[in-house]
Length: 59
Image (cartoon, rainbow, N blue to C red):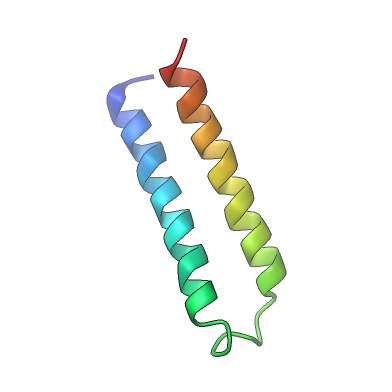
């Protein structure tokens, strides 16, 4: 895995965290959405991506 691919995973992780923070700050405004599924999906994606970075970076 090249360094650019690792950086892309980190950027995607940052996007997931930003989405979670946005949801937590605006929960009342977006309460009509299914927030539980959205949060679960974002957290799952985050953990998978960060694990890929960990596995590929540390050998």
